[in-house]
Length: 238
Image (cartoon, rainbow, N blue to C red; front, top):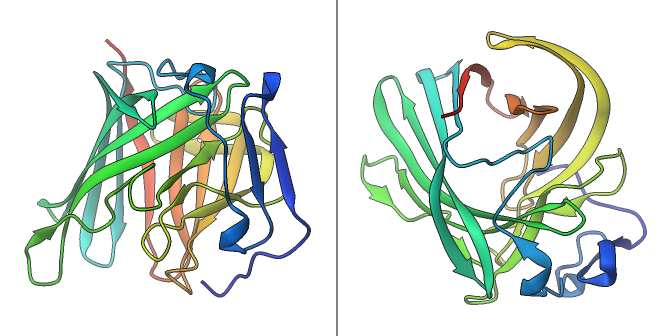
């Protein structure tokens, strides 16, 4: 993307000294999180990204290709990645009523409350209509490393890596606000955290994601690139 990550090295020290993530700007060589499996749990309770099994979020919006619908469900399953037990989240996307993407994501929370992503198994429809595993990656395999998807205490500041497989999965994010008020079809929320998400592998595209406390993501909006927006229309828990 056109936005370039700049600034001094970022040092995120997680509680109990169990993991350290260093990222010096966009320098790939400096990214080397140390992961202690004993410091993580598959019980994800971060208020901005609570992943309780049985929870389901439904999003809808319009893109250039028609009505887009995204359904995210936290399963009862876990998967061990790099020795860490991760909760499995199932994410499906349809566009104009047709399947577009089917993904299983693996998340874990550290003792500080930061939520990490340890990989994903994804099937995405290409321009030829065929589904491929594009976007799939796993921490600990072929150089893949986990990244942060939601800090324990979100504050505007330095960027952080969300996923990392060189040349394949390099999503990044930065918190830009923690005080937004926002209304979506599912309700009205305050103290909303907003992140700017991008990848150096996809220049010219950036999203803003909005997270409400106790709910999770309530809006995902493309702010650079093609126009699209998904709003939360339904959230259920069993």
